[in-house]
Length: 285
Ligand code: PMP
Image (tube, rainbow, N blue to C red):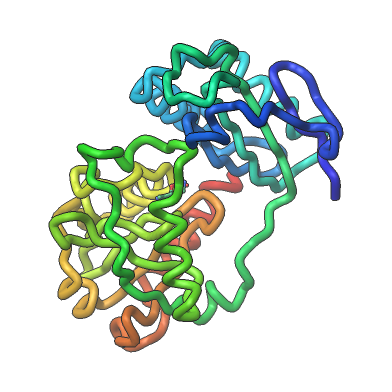
């Protein structure tokens, strides 16, 4: 279904929604974005997404040309104008149009674009049977080069990993960091269950601090599950009892095979199932 796209305060029919080919968002991936989810017309953790968007912009010295309240309103209007209940929303801010040189000082007018669509969910089978993923050779960006905490418009690192995963028949792929430690997947964070404790790499491993990740950590603690943010190796993954991924679009999705090795008994585990259900309820509450 064609949608109405928000650009700098106005709504345009999808086919008329355009920005300049001189925009540094296009020329260099110079900009930031968020992916948000709505349930029953209400955005899940809107404030956290706005925090992260503003932090990403600050980290790349980009001033967002509107207030947080205005951005929140524009996101809600995008849902309302498109009559979307269960949606996926992409909000992005580009550096704006400039010269062909890198210099961001030669750009003007950062562009704010919001696209709201109905969510294309993963098939039920992924949740019932679990995913098979591989560890890819593409290393997650070094935090001192381009910090994965910044949700920048340059997603090539993740795209290269995704291509490697897809070529191996996997829709998600595990990336290690420059030290060879487990980092995250191309668009999802990773969790392990080992001896009934929930383990996940800390933000220091060089990952995006996922909003679903944070919600799952809270839910696990509320459920009395021990949660440890710690360094994880491939060995930890291979010997875990359970594994799952979290993300705005995916929510909580079980992983049953990594690098063609069975995780646990090769079926989605009980703690994964419990957290999946708890997240499902939280998001729809
Ligand atoms: N890691 C990466 C690289 C991502 O792009 C995403 C999706 N935004 C995530 C993790 C999951 O984050 P969230 O739960 O905030 O969607």
